[in-house]
Image (cartoon, rainbow, N blue to C red):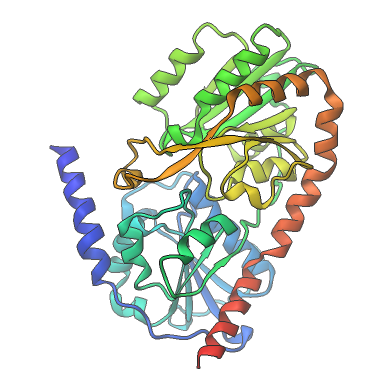
Length: 405
C-alpha cells in the first residue's frame, strides 16, 4: 500500500505539480552590488546534494556576493543531521524581499514541495536557477517538465551541461563544485586498526544513492582479484544510510570472510571522512556514472591519487596524468532506483574489472606510480575549480540576458 501511494505521488508530482509552477519573468540585475542571492538546499544534511549547497553559498560569499541560505529539511520532515553556518557573509542582514536571484540546489523531484510551500508568487519575483547534477545521457520526463519554469540551469560538469542543453533553450552552464580540502582527522588508520605501512584503498558511497551506480561490488571484485592474498593490503568501504537494507546485506555477503575488506556503515564527521581519504594510498570509484564525482575531487585536493571509471562528470578533472583511469564498455542501465525506472534505453559505463585489478596490483607493487599521480592531482583539481566558478557562470548569464534584450 505504501509503495502504491509513493508511485501515485511521483506521477502526480511529475505530471501535475511540475506543470503548476510558472516561469518567472524577473531578470538579473546588471550590477553585482545589486544582486542578492538566496541559495536553497539541504544545508544541514550529510549528503552530496547538501554539500553542493554549502559549497555554492560559501564560494559566492567569499567572492563578495550578498548571500542568504535557506535550508529545506523542514519541507521534507527531515531531521537536521549537522550544524552549519555561512562564514564571510556579505548580506548585510538584508530582508527576504531583497532577493532577486535564487539558486536551487535541488534536483527536479525535490522542487515542487519546496516551491509550492514557499509560494508561487514568491517564486515569480526572482530569477531562478536550478543547480542540477545528473549522471546519464538522457533525462527523465519530470526533469524536462521542470526545465519549463527555470530561468537557467547550472551543473557541476561539462558532461551534465551537454546532456541538459539538448532539452532546453534556456542557458545551461557549468560551475564546478568548489570543493575545499577541509580539516582531516589524523588517526584514522589507528582507529580502523590498519598498520601504518600497509597499502590502503578506500571508497565512499551511499546505499540510498543507487548502489548499482556507485558499484562498490565491482571494486570488491577487482581488489579481491589483485590483492586478496596480500595481508598488508586493505580495502575500506565507507557507507551511510545502510540500515538493514537489501543492498547492505548483499554487499556484506560479497565481502564475508575477507579479512582485509572492511565495511564501515555509521555516521562520521566530515573530518573523519576526509581523514580516511587522506590516509589512503589510493581512492577508488568504479562507478557506472557520475554527475560530478565529489569524493574523487576531495581525494585529489588532499593529494590522494584516484582510480576511476573514465566516463561522465569526473572526466572534467581526471586525466591519465593525475589519475588511474579505467576503460569501460557501455551497458544498459539496470536499476531499481525511482529516477532511472522510466529510462528504458539509457546506458552507463561498466568498468573493465580485469584492467582495474591490474592497476591495483601495479600500484601496490610500484609505489612511484602513486607518487607521480599525487604530485599533480591537487594542482589539477584546483585549476578545474578556479576555471569554472559560480561568478563566471553568473557573468555569462548576465551577458546572455543582455544579448537577448
